[in-house]
Amino acid sequence: MRTPLLVRPTAALALAGALALSACGSSDSQTATTSGSDTLSVGVGYFQSATTGPEVVVAGNDDLSSKVDGTLKLTPIDSGVAGLAELRGGAFPFVSGVGNPPVVGAIANDTKLKVVFAEYFDAAQLVVPPSVKTDADLVGKSIGALQGSSEDFEIRGWLSTKGLTGKTKVVGFPSEAAIAAAYKSGRIDAGYVEIAQALDLEKTKGARQVVTAQQIAELGFPSLNVLAVTDDFAAEHRAVVQQVVCQVLKAQTRVAGAKGDTYITNAGKLVGATPEQAIPATKVLPFVPADQQLSWFKDSPTGDLTTGRIAKAYALTAQFLKDQGRVPTVPTSAQIAAHLDSSYVEQALKDGCGA
Image 1 (spheres, helix red, strand yellow):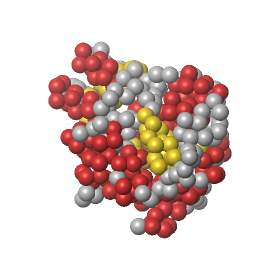
Image 2 (tube, one colour; image 1 turned 180 degrees about the horizontal axis):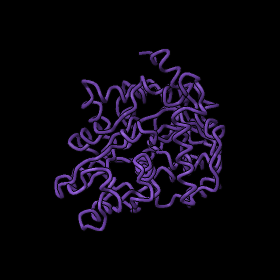
Image 3 (cartoon, helix red, strand yellow; image 1 turned 60 degrees about the vertical axis):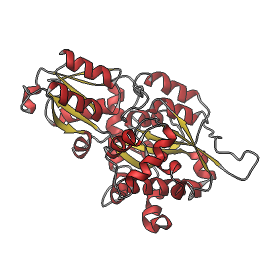
Image 4 (cartoon, one colour; image 1 turned 90 degrees about the horizontal axis):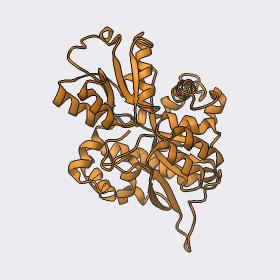
């Protein structure tokens, strides 16, 4: 989830309905077309916010976008679930920044797509009042989380590692703002929220941070926001998919580099975000470094996709969704692996993307 410039509705609000929509949509993605010229239109569904994701950084900087044999067309989406439903219906061949639950829901419905790049973790954290001094103090307490979202999955995973499942209540909310309001009014004891709300609660209510999404990921419950592409587009335009992956990889590296502010500023112009908004909102994102990309896809040392960290995280997420009645069955490890393609990352790391 990203810090909003325009309010970003939760991906959980219409999960079941959007999954049903994706199941009924066409699997043909025809957005990438040539309209009266030889220029390929490369559509990307993205979240419009103050945070400039890597796809926006690519589109907003000519030294990156010029390396793609086509014209990037960014289409705003308001949730990962809706974005994947639009992708399946042919609105665009790429979708960026989608987290575990919507991707796993798409896999459960056999959407013909491949996850091709691990972009970043959520910038979420658990905040608690000063009275909560140890993990054990959370027994009998309530924690607010975005219902059915990546954050919901993450905090429940963290509670399980602390032996607090069933001892601490997770309360679902429709938005980050609603969680913060409930915390301020005393209706919940703690909140698992995005960085903007966490900082506000720390400032106004004296809350303190306990754990972040990135730390939870290291405990075995990662929720990755990823780049995915339809099978149809990848089959017809493999070279372009490789170029997009390469430039997204470069974008994440450039944002963290010496000229990061310039790259973010250029990208922010595309989404109406000022440098004052875009730079801090983007730099807080915990991007997955280039040297860790392949380790997320493939198990070490076997090199097996079915037992890689993404596949394991998706299996845990599937069980989470099944427990909530949002998917009927948990996809097998083979079904999950069939929706992962590490070859683009492998090629990018091998040849340096022509850098």
